[in-house]
Image 1: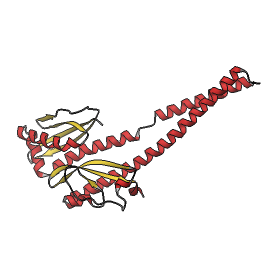
Image 2 (image 1 turned 90 degrees about the vertical axis):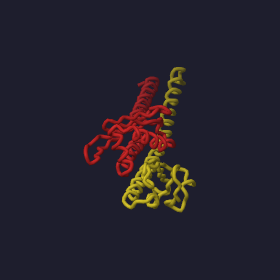
Image 3 (image 1 turned 180 degrees about the vertical axis):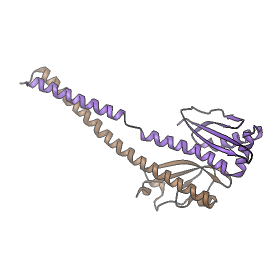
Image 4 (image 1 turned 135 degrees about the vertical axis):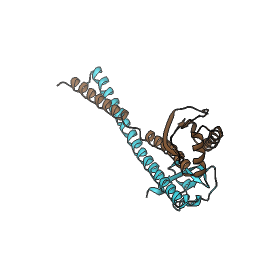
Amino acid sequence: MNRRAFVFTLEALLTLIAAVVFVFLSVQPNAENATAQLQREALAQDLLETATKEKMIANTLYAFAEGNNAAKQEIERKWTILFSNASVTCFGFTAGSGTLETKCRGQKRFSATASRVLFDGMRFNEARLTLYFDS
Amino acid sequence: MFSFDVLIASLLAVTTAALLLYVLVANAHSFASHADDSRLHAAAFVASEKALKTCASEGGAAKCVGGFVFVNELVTIPTTPPTNNSLDSQERRACVSRIALVGGEQRIVIYCAGEGDLN
């Protein structure tokens, strides 16, 4: 092999290795995004978990599921205040015949959904909460 | 004596090698940094889980902060640093936001872990 062929071969090999490295780096799972999503999911789960544990809040959810408008307004007010200092931009909540969609104060870049079964002693209703985040 | 095209090819080869080395070194540092961040986030998350369970089983907001730094923008509760070093003095830290019942109301609580919590 002459010198010129050797240099070109070496260069081609290095380029190939560089390409492999770039491909390897591009297919790496982004751990940071996974952690952030885990936290978003935890926040949605926490909200429903604590809401169903506390009797007063649970009663509001039961009333909401029955279509009570006052309960809807209370949930919207309290959860909007709760999320005023978080990166939650808006949320959607459905339970029984109740549906609530709040106005977004930012982008809906990410979302996290949680659901629980509500039982008020008479009937079961599925409560479904979706939180939207801009970061 | 080198011809001109061999010289150009050699320069290209050296440049490619330098770029490759740069990418490897830069990302090695990035990988190490991500690993540390992941450990901090995991520590903060585990701390929040423990604290919330303690809070739920024993009741009372004060129980929620035992052993962990507690920051809450909505209610004021004395903090208990996990180590002698304040989290503020630690360069690297990770925080997780959770929701806890404080006095029958839902509140956002933020649990943080610093480098001191990893040892």
